[in-house]
Image (cartoon, rainbow, N blue to C red):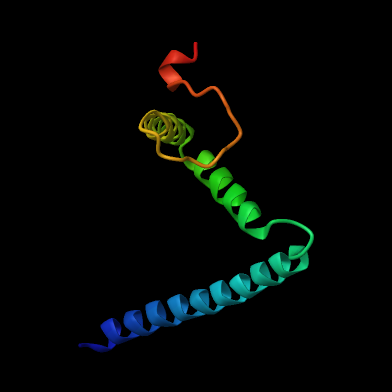
Length: 99
């Protein structure tokens, strides 16, 4: 490996390690924020809501399709007599059918 390649390698490794440290600090901050909510809110549900909103921002149509399929699966399980947890009922329609 020549000196230029070593220099590039060191730069890349250094930058990635710095970002990993920042990510770890952010993860600790997020944990602290959720700790504030423990006992006051259902933290697991809050995390699920955050995850849902992130997915929605990334690809709304794909998420809507997944919700439709989930509703279909839950309905199919109810038809077979399998107990399904009660979730808030909501009209699910494929994005193409919503219009």
